[in-house]
Amino acid sequence: MKASSVLFLCSLSVALAEDFKAINGKEYKNARVSRVEPDGIVLVTSSGISKVYFIELPQEVQERFHYDAAKATAYSVQQAATQEAFRKQQEELRRTLAEQSQTNQPGKLQPRAVPVAERGPAVAVISHGAQVDIAKHLARGNVTIVDFYADWCGPCRQVSPNLEQMANTDPEIALRKIDIVNWNTAVARQYNVHSIPQVSVYNRDGRLVGTVNGVRVEEIRRLVAEAKTGG
Image (cartoon, rainbow, N blue to C red; front, side):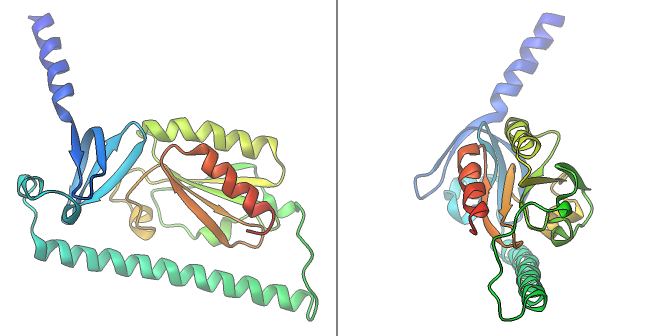
């Protein structure tokens, strides 16, 4: 009886993983649906966790997950408003940093900053699901890597050691980690996170250089190198 139960559970686990193909030809191999939202599904694959919108999927998939265009539109509008609020927050941060720079040395070009004491700890978790102002945790004069992750995310566990090694071995890099906990937390909604691991790199002036989704460590290293030289 025990052997039969184990076999059944294994078969069920395999059945949960399947292939999805978007109408543009993009494929998600051996993917598991971890969440269904009004405008799309969240898929877990070996390379990361991604959201695929229903409008990108064939009609049979839309019908299978009871896609409702009206509900999807309302949900998307809400998410877009959150994204716009974040964009404005980033613009305000850049404006503030520019004003501070001009105040410190009016009429002069700022020399390339060097590592300063404001880096703080090399690695720090700055949120466990709660809202957080990333701008307040950027390491001034250094490159800051912001890692959105979750303990249950396997691909995140592949990326994290590489990020921690960068920060622990390079005094010009600071790593700030944000545990989204789950897709419904305040911080996940605040930054409209639909895919993890999600890694953002900020330059010495606090400007966002770029964001990388999935297990793409070399791309993160490239952004870090760019951020060091000004980005």
